[in-house]
Image (cartoon, rainbow, N blue to C red; front, side, top):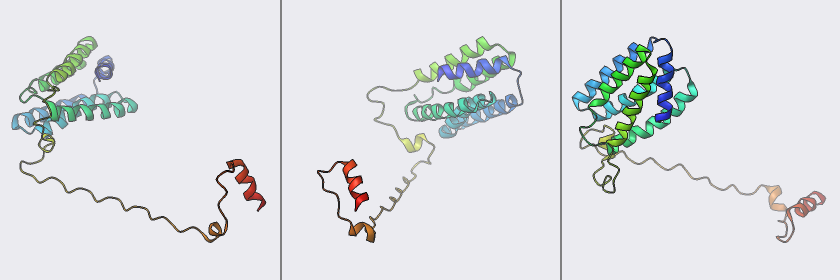
Length: 189
């Protein structure tokens, strides 16, 4: 992810800032408000959206699609394993990255993105006891005390069809025959 996103900010800093920049800045403001309100699920979604919006601004659909998968996985890890209270600097880091892109300082934008992603990695609790107190529903923004979703009904199993009349009349080939011989035998019948 660090390699991909460093390339994204380098590409954007080399080009002219487009209309996407204002929209991304506004979205970072929404991210800040979600963080202040303690809406962790929304905050994580918006923080991931920041990275996806930057990828979209490159105009490279394949890169954006790949990064979407990677960001989704990372967002889930953050939701599950983030040390509480450590995400406060992310909004500031996002704004600093945008400032470097806008200034055309690709080296600074790349370094800031690298530092930002390393910081996210460092604040994850990935030790042996990390999963003991993980609540996936609350990490993803479900209301407190909400009942878990009902399991989906299993897809109906396929019922074997009875053999057709023509198939029932033909005797199966002897198991000792090779497939090649069975084919010839069937043609001569």
